[in-house]
Length: 254
Image (cartoon, rainbow, N blue to C red; front, side, top):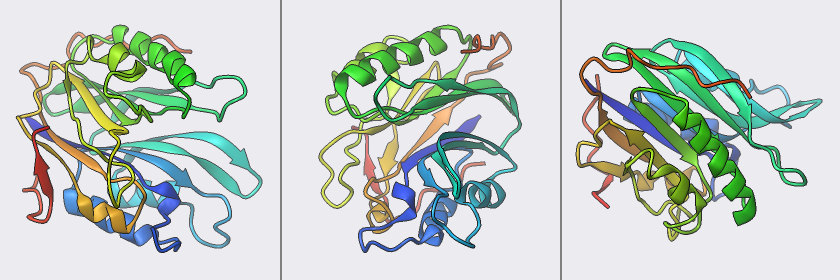
């Protein structure tokens, strides 16, 4: 079975023109028709009478979704989401916050795909290296407690390809994307990635440069091959029909 995974920091749906436009974000996601979708910087505060983007994303793209509201206010919340084409089981939000820094979290779920159970983790990590080091260690602990195929994706804010996230996750999840995604207009940094095991990347993943019109990050998309009889030995971590890619995409194997 082949499935499509996508991760994107949507920058509160505010484009480089300074305009809030969730429809631009929704349109680009819809083009890719992801089976698994991780979305960061979902902002529901200050939207007035507009519907919450948490609600809109859930309704437009998947009946199965989990969100982590890392900041809450009287007029809404801010955080990130994991959405799936298939049902989620035993989903949970794990606190990754470091004292004195912005609250952070990881969403963990067991997803019942047609090929079997798949463990998925979606995260948005902090900006300081010392902060990410602690958060990456916690992510690695979650992954070690999972059996079977696993996908970890999100905005890891890791400036170096040999930073704490790479050092913590690559021994456990050897297949990964590696695309420069930030800043979107002239991407220099590999902040947004998809790690997996023992799933194959099919030799192809890409970033969609059309994303620069909607966010300050480019989205990353990867097609993954699920192993035979996947996920039947999946263990829950302890608490604490893919369409062809659009021709406009920038293809890369790097």
